[in-house]
Image 1: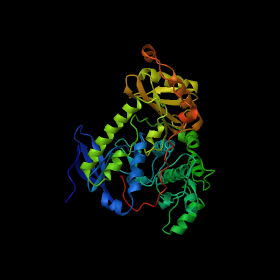
Image 2: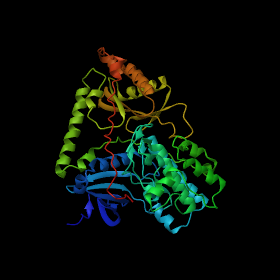
Image 3: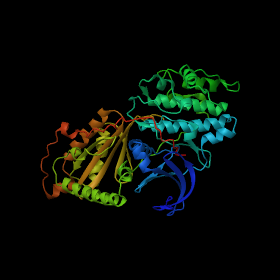
Image 4: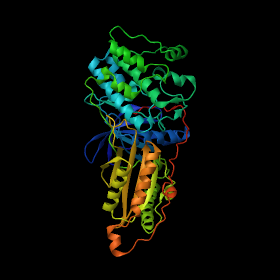
Length: 469
């Protein structure tokens, strides 16, 4: 039997990409008429090839990212035999197609695409995502010629500074340190690939290319390339700083952005904050055998979650973190109970933020983002992500969830300590009715984090052979 013509609210159309385990189809959202791209993965082949973890990692990575130059994922739907990843449709095709019929790009066009690539990669790195397979085939263009990074099948999720060990990527774009079979930094490896792409935009051909892999890798390891005569001095200089075979001396993204050639007509594009939390519920459900069982389990989980909070509202123990240790989440989280109204609780969060010199930005759904007051020039250079969300369980009972995915731990602990102290104070409402019972808020208990679980390092070279283009 062939594929269904409709998946949920989506009407399937023509195939726009195909690989070993998956194909990508154009589809229409029947609720609003918008086009989407649906990546259809054969579940059986993925499970038999032991690639379940890699598919889940790719989906989770795309859910973490929200940037105008990164392909956005909308949702994941599972059936008994297929996994459907609904993504943003990018109508302009691959950058490689553009390069195939253009000898080389003019300086302004190459600069614009490179600026967008660097902004997208910078956003990925700020979220702990390292692509590891940047190449023109994985860079899409929209109808206006703007760039979108896609295909995170070989990506890695790590804390800044952590070393990676798996050698992966496409031979002509791989960084020399990956060829040494030693640990490497994902950020430096991605920057090298960006440099190869920049050379290709200017020259119309690759800086390192040879049919013999041994010869190719020797050229890469020694950064043996020759710039064509039409390269300007500023172009040669920037490429030379990026294609430095020593990763410790290689230029960084902040340094690339400060480069005079890069700064010409530069309009920074920053990522957006997501109001929704990043869960893998739909991804996990997509791998379940029986579709009806998935829906039933989701309903039960939702109901139990609400009842648990109703019980928590009766508790006098402010440290709630231990009740949530089962979540598969990269962020560090602390949950603190509040015997105040939701407005009073938000005011106390703002007061706690002021105590530790954090500026406050109110978001939707009672969520608050906090940043150091001494902000840097670009929003995604600070590498600090601290947020607090207030969950209402009763008129005078709330749960505050404090989460940190980037930045130093000391500031996070200081904020949690200040907030827990403020939440002990009697609220205006409760003081008029009855005296609040004393609460033991030992700071060591309050700051008991449910440490973020590291994803299992089961990286392997990806034999899937499919592209999300």
